[in-house]
Length: 158
Image 1 (cartoon, rainbow, N blue to C red):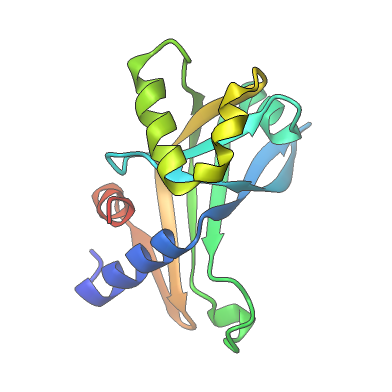
Image 2 (cartoon, rainbow, N blue to C red):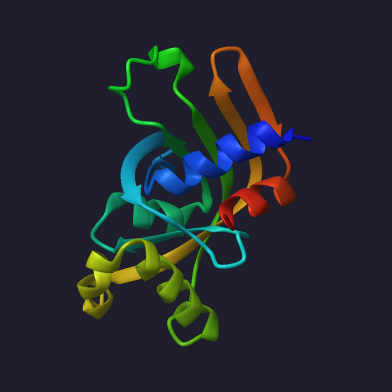
């Protein structure tokens, strides 16, 4: 269980970072890309809005196991090993456009990325919900924590 200070740090990182490194499996090997993300309204998933032209989209359709790493950017003078970061391993699920869940996810995504509105008019884009199964938070040098599902959900709802 995370203490209050660590929960605040995790929440602040998730709030400040709107881009994630997304790891998928491509032809049996890890592949990493960069994608904008947003928390689902209930904090139960990370949302990504991705094009069918992107390799990571076909990878998620072929094998739903993914990981997303959200990190404080370099440049603050902090040693690279001490940069706060969180890695979330989970299952990616495409949200059906005809479902009520799609409109809720779209609203949540656009609240964080309003300039992405035009991509929702393109037929090759889909929303995927990454449902967390395991989370690891590095809050700084020597401060590593496993994060429970409810703790992550709370941090994502900040």
